[in-house]
Length: 392
Image (cartoon, one colour):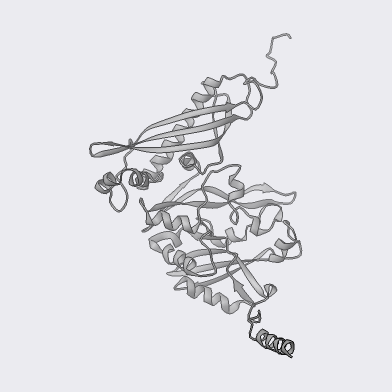
């Protein structure tokens, strides 16, 4: 009798257990991969990139009979209003938990317009702080429609996963929402955002293929966009932070300018040391790096290579720093270095979190090339070129 009673009680209690009745089935949802934000005619223009997760589940390369993504677009006085307009035109529930990046147009970053956008996605419980952030001057809609090389899934594109391509070359440092918020809230209250453009560097047997390209950085402050540092002017940025995995420099090997050499740089370690001289502050930069020689013609000494590497890296750092000064930007975050190391000095000099910077504020750049790897055991060329008139 006791056993029967226990059984009845157990059956009754199971009816009180919560189930999954209110859970939406995965196939009945649309998955946001990216959001584009523009600002046109005093309104936010929001683009939602919805990807086909069936392709992601099957393989890295999606099926040819399905669209890899669709873009929804709506305008609103706020970002939320535009998103709610897109909800009305959606056939299924939209899921935000897989959102990977936000890309801003130039106008969407001006005059503090980006702040409510970042605030919206940070406060929303379904999104994460690890959402990557980019800026562009190209149409946001076009950037979101660019397919990865070989028509791979959009979830494996460089914008969705920037860590993977930066293992081979770290021209710009990827930034997520968490790093953007920290950078804007701490001295110097400016932060670099990767700048994306569209290029046609790849092609098939039928056409040139569009691909996204990291061209430089946009500089963002609490007041809005300060400007862009792009292409060669942005090269020095990669040598001033320890995130860089690998980069390259190309320079003239001979004084006659006939020989060009490309060297890979890795194992980078950088220190920015503030030096206080009465009421002025200077910075000494110490870099330690390793170099690998790729291909070259003729014979070259290790001493000559070190000299040229040091000269070129110094030049690129100075050029990028000076480009930042033109925009009134502390592009290397020297103000933060002083704030961390000598906060009393920083308090005396700072204005809105930033200290005054001059062209000579970076007083000295010391570079230690710890090792040069020739790829083989010698710095002489592999294929000997026979000179005219000689007999061998």
